[in-house]
Image (cartoon, rainbow, N blue to C red; front, side):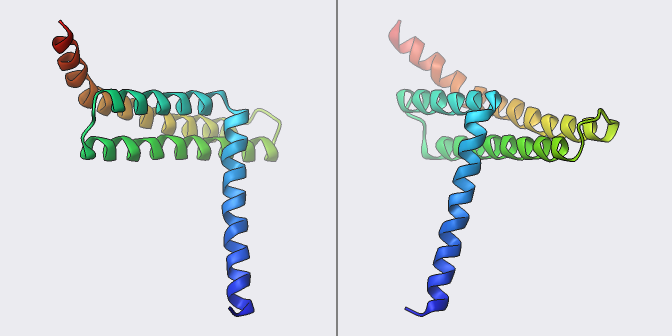
Length: 130
């Protein structure tokens, strides 16, 4: 294998390593990220118990990715704002609030989609038990 290909592989591995370090740091540092990860695990467990269809799993996986990604971006924006200024500035507050708002919108929409998927299944499951 050529030296150029080896350098590309090393660069690729380093890039993945940095990405995983960022994800790990966010999970360790951010309470909200821990809660999102817990919700992902609970939805996976509920999905297994309630036997989600492939399409329902696809929706869930896309929503997991959207929420977790937005939380990472929100955390990054907060870190950059804090790095730039420790003073209370309206633009710094706006940047942080807007990033948090993006996560909130995604979480509310994911919860709505989750209700559409899970409520009928939970009702059918409960009906089968009675």
